[in-house]
Length: 566
Ligand code: MN
Image (tube, rainbow, N blue to C red):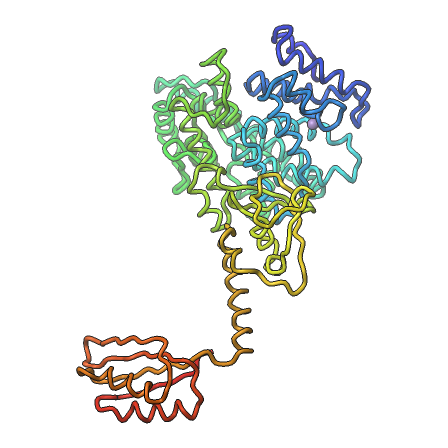
């Protein structure tokens, strides 16, 4: 399906053309699983990336994305020949490739990690193009690798695409993964849906002209009025929530109206509602309140021809493109606007529109937060304050920046934290005070019976680590004191406050040769009573009893309490 014609739109000697030449050379002789020359793959990825409107650097990086990992060409070579920007993108893609995804439990963590780790969103978008081509050719892979790969696509990459607003891609990835993950359910759904779809299609053929005519009668000439069938995997997920009852799914086939302006969207809605009765509680204004991923549209459900329930979506052309392409659509617009000017990625906020997108990204980041802890961390600029490091088994750990191996150890398990004596970062032994960086592989060296020391509190960054250190310290101090016996005694003396009272109290301790280490007197303003708290060096029980009796004898003493301090 991929030719090289499109390459010719880039001039001879451009980074794209040179990247193609290098990739061809590097992958020379290598074959894909289906026997095709390997270069077909990077070429397809690059063409997709180009189709999404990304810049030259991205297209070149897409061509080179498997080179650093699979061939003799190194990242240093790429940096030398193509510059820092392209090398940076290729490096990001190489690192993402080495990520291992195992358990569903880690999916959210993994998605957050990938987003943060991509740093430049272009890395993530190229990665999605890579995934798209791999999914399209998944049937060539050995059987046992198909399902896990499809699962990773559905759990990690399709949701990421969705969060970037790339709805079309997200749906495509899910639909391609579906038959590999749930083959039986897929077969069942295809059979069930086929007839319903055919009925619906026939019904829509009668609805469409009615809608078009009504709109035109009101002076609205839509760009398009068409029927949109719900995607299979998303239908399957919805059916799970509706007892697998297809009759409860109103948007199985939805009517889509695309008009010129926002005003026309609302006008068209008025026309629809005057034509057919809206179903109460089903109108959603995603134009006034876009979804977290930037999706904009008006949704309404009406009792249509023959009283059948039908969902209708109304949006502008621009919204439609953005809904389908997400952030990539934004790139495409910017490309056209700035033409030759190079894009710096999302970090360089220039004009207002870009700012809106950055804000949206921040909203997505919030959508990523499933844990309370993470919500607290998102106050700050993007993932700047977070780092993501690996266990030797390639599990991802999410830590605040400046975190040390001690924080990491406690994140893994409190036991590991407590007994931590040293750490290896990327295979090298380092002090446990070392600051960790994203991408580090951290291994903790432990020793049985080891206890945390107080100075760890000076460099530990996470609250979790600090809490455990304090607890462990308290315990060890407790053991120490138990061994050493009582450290003192405490007397609480309630009295009717009068001048000279305290002096009589302290005199009793002096006579008994007991050292006072702490003295405090508090008066309760409502009652005329005052409480004297007095701590001393340890006293033997017999002597304490004697002291209590003497204190009680002082005029104005109401009550005396005594306890031994350990
Ligand atoms: Mn690839």
